[in-house]
Image (cartoon, rainbow, N blue to C red; front, side, top):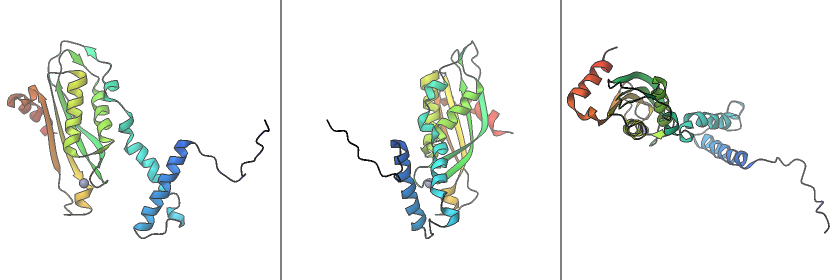
Length: 203
Ligand SMILES: [Zn+2]
């Protein structure tokens, strides 16, 4: 069989499949920059599509992380008192407008013999915040995932956030704070909920 000696053109850049996909997205982002009225080839914007793509990798890194792997290690204990991590800062992206919303999340749970390291609660918040979200669902995702993988007596999540989609556009309400919560298990009892609120409402 004769060998195929055809040479590839020397100037053709060879990309891997993922580099190819990223290149296509960068081209699309360039079109967005042109659409808003600017010249995507001017000096200040040349690298912008690449920077946007790199930001997305971090902003949406939650899709690659599994909550069950965070909750895999726990301490067996007899503690059945409320555990709270309050006012954790978070940053997320509104799925309706692709604009940021950010603020604080407080998570409380009452163990059922399994206790997790407190940093795991922070990681749970990040896993679900670093996805396209709506605030109500962010609370529910964290609460449901803890109920499923840690099986505590109950969970409560409260989220307070500012949304760029109502401050930078639309109704333009700059300082409006949206508050949402999710209650599961024993937190549906008013006295348990009240205990959580007592601990989290004061600085
Ligand atoms: Zn929005």
